[in-house]
Image 1 (cartoon, rainbow, N blue to C red):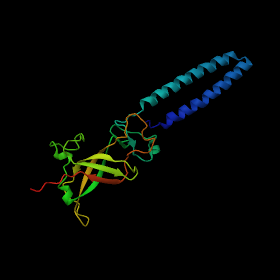
Image 2 (image 1 turned 60 degrees about the horizontal axis):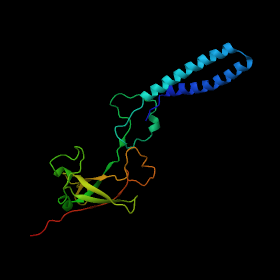
Image 3 (image 1 turned 90 degrees about the vertical axis):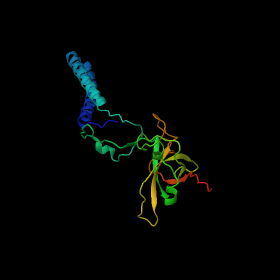
Length: 212
């Protein structure tokens, strides 16, 4: 994306208007036989072309590449135009949709029966968000995509219960690989894809302990 510099944009617009005038002036000079003036017009037009090329090169340098392919979540992007940014300033919020996360609530009994990624292999789920074998699996259905089922994995479960309601609930984060995501493709064009903000239900594959 490019956050357009207003001054450069104005100069490009002026140059475009000037180019149209050059054509009219050339035609007039040819009609009146003023060949000396015709040469001056060509020199001015060449200089304008060089100035335009230089501005376009500067604009090319202003392009900022996102570190990830995803969906721009920042609202009012047009308001960002013309602002100056320092190194490290946040410009846009971009969500990479290759792997999505959802928050579900677990009953106290359920929380004791699930295994999350952090309990497998001793690492934190935040350290690369790799799906580790042994974590509890889940199947997710979203209201916006009826008839589709998404495979998911329990990424983490809160250590403390939420006691604000009538019963104790543990919040769990589930990791949902997005099967529709394709790098470098306009895969959002169809509109029938998994994306942030959708709601649905999750069914956990909990293995019951056997009774001796």
